[in-house]
Image (cartoon, rainbow, N blue to C red; front, side, top):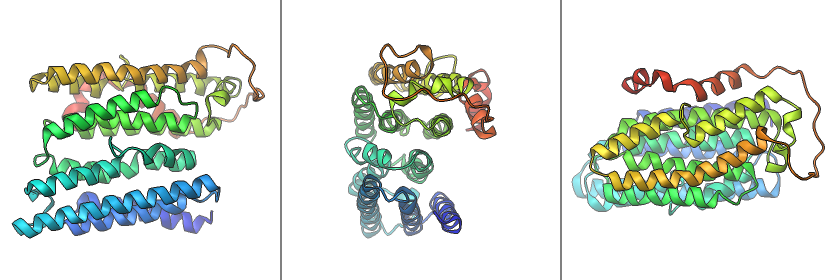
Length: 346
């Protein structure tokens, strides 16, 4: 892709995100989301592969539908209450439509079907943007309207997301699809707590973005897209593979790694809110995710494959790992000891 075009699309992405997260008026928030959608489409389809074109088309249709619903929700609220302010969403029908719109934007169950397909069709770097940056504006709108939304509906959607994200990721062999279902399961954790402690949702999103960025960049560095190719990358960059192993375990939420922090705080808050059954169910469902993370980690470093693969083992390279990957993998594994400092900052 032309560097100037890539620069324009990147600036548009940042601009769209900045407009949405800083706006008080629904029309401005909608305009920011539209700029974001239009800026990411060329980045998804830049390889001109039929799967990439299909992914871009699916993404456009889903996001356009979600934006329409969001606009309809704000107009309905303005019709009944005369308020265009984002925090003044009070009409129950508007709240219900907005919940559907944001769930569609994020890829929450039952509007999750598009996300694994789009991520599978996009390059790894664009997949990273789709899994992190593109979710930030909808999460911000969730945060601003959290006091108006129905907690029971959000809890049901969250538990279903954690369940389906875990179950559907079990038999996948494509790494991007596994990370897509992982994202859906993490969104379940963010959604279940948003009505009770919205700051915890943001903290969870920040830590999830950190760990996902480290995973995507490491996979992009070793050029692994399938489990079979991941089995042969240990010969290429052993130290990066070892850090990828720890980052995947952190994504699974195992102590004493960074990923355990948001899960720990969310379970604590749910218990305080007399929602121990919901906390128990979502904790048990996270074991499904743990299984496919362990499978990824197993393929990455733990042992040689028990059978021969169709892929040649790659040459060991002395090319230094990019400093960004080094910083992100370190943060993805070692932030838990300073958690008393992190939570107040959020």
